Length: 64
Image 1 (cartoon, rainbow, N blue to C red):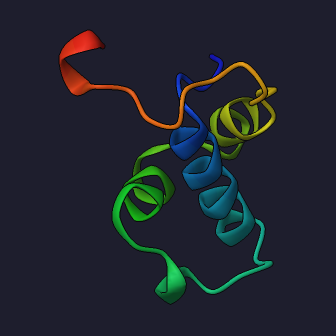
Image 2 (cartoon, one colour):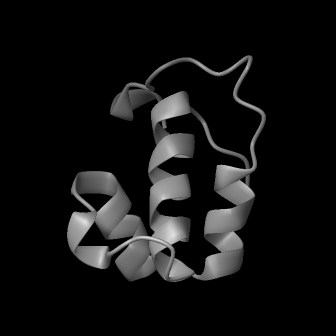
C-alpha cells in the first residue's frame, strides 16, 4: 500500500525506525506513534518506501 502524502510517508519512516530499534519509541508523536502501535513492520516498510516526488504534502481526511 503506497503512502498518500509526504507526511504519511515520513511518519511511516519514523515508526519503522522505532520498530527496528534504530530510534526510541518514546520519541514518536502523533501519527508515527499510532502507526507504530497498529501496523506491522512490512506495512510500515511499504508506506515508507513510497516514492514521494509526486505526493502532496498532506491529504485532506475527507478525500480518503
